[in-house]
Amino acid sequence: MTIGLSSFQLKMIAIISMVIDHVGMLMFPEEMAFRVIGRMSFPIYCFLIVEGFYHTSNVKNYIKRLAVFALISEIPFNILVSGNLLDVEHQNVFFTLLIGLLTVYAINNTINPMLKSLILVAGAMAAIALMTDYSFYGIILIYVFFNMREKRLFACIFMAVMSFIVSPIQGSATMAVIPIMLYNGEKGPGFMDKKVWKYTFYAFYPVHMMALYVIGCFISGL
Image (cartoon, rainbow, N blue to C red; front, top):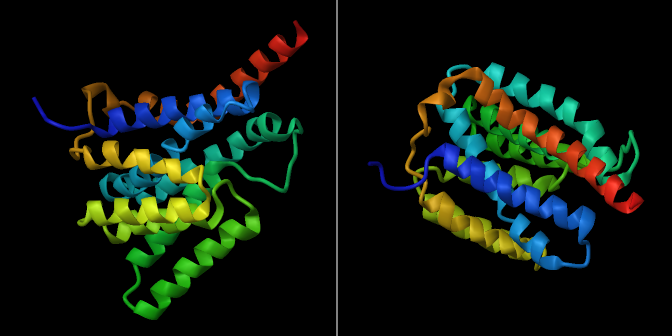
């Protein structure tokens, strides 16, 4: 029996944390406990993006999947966050993860240290310009997990410090240090090799947002 947490288990922790966060945002906006628990999900997703980059057999297909689901998720995200079909002032987290993946992909294929720095700045600026969820914080976090992949503890410490700098509530993301440090490098159950499960994890994001919106409308109509 392998000790630690597999990527499947990390994904489940991130998903549960994310759902708790969104339930709190939509139904219990004054109960900060929901949002505090929810801060755990994003650092785990950033960590998994980097692990996916190293383990995928085709990075370009990985990039395409993120791009497709970023577009698919935008309307559900807009509806949940602002109640509008279109909202150019805030883009969903898939766009942040996509930009982060593109950034580390470009850096990984570059030798020049100065150019690496410029690519990182460009990625952060792109997230700011597009007003993606978590903005430049997400891009830097993905880069940190990429650049310090062999020094995971230092990456987690950097993540914790940076999270507290961003905001007190984002400092709660420090809780993600425990599951990330327990990651054992394993994929998880055998069924995870099937494409249907791979796409299920991607699809969960837009589907759960629409489900929460419908539930919220039903509750408010009672």
